[in-house]
Image (cartoon, rainbow, N blue to C red; front, side, top):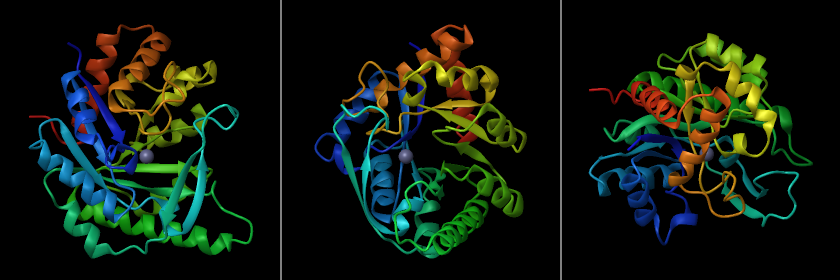
Length: 284
Ligand SMILES: [Zn+2]
């Protein structure tokens, strides 16, 4: 059975409050390892608890503070901005201030394989926002997370929306030692090239199944630099679009990569799982 690695899932979110363990069990039974990714302190802690529930076998955690969590917001989340048929998922953010010590403590847990999700998000600013101040705060926090990742010697899972240029400048300034993934990458293949040159991997998810417009990126990024992810409960791949996403659907992302690369599903599984395991330091 091919082994897959969902490098970015949020089974630690409330969407899975009732059945998170069942969902993770289903993934493991299908040969899928999972990293649950925190977006604030509470969900980061829950990600670490899941590792313990599964004794660290195939279930891992990443801890971080998502840039949209720096402010109190209600965000309407759609899988695809152009598809108005989909139910709107509302994301309520709490407005958390970053505490280095609190994150350092959980980041040291052996079940934590990466720091994330952290990054820059210039997409969700609202009217009346002091945008220069918000950008400056997001950058300050991201620099601190790079320092933390270097301190614990773990790679990073970076979220970036409408901010690739600023992210490149920042990463050149602060030089993370382990790199990691630019998750849910939606930039051009030229922008991807800049991250690849700097040692970053590209995270591909359900967005790749929505249309052919993602194919060029999959073609241009070498297979040894691609990792796959679901970003569940969001970004559900076709043909399940509109349903809640879950780690077992990561296979559909792999199938899309296989068809664009002209390779078998087994080859994609082997390569992307190997990439993930090397990146997370899980190679024995
Ligand atoms: Zn995410």
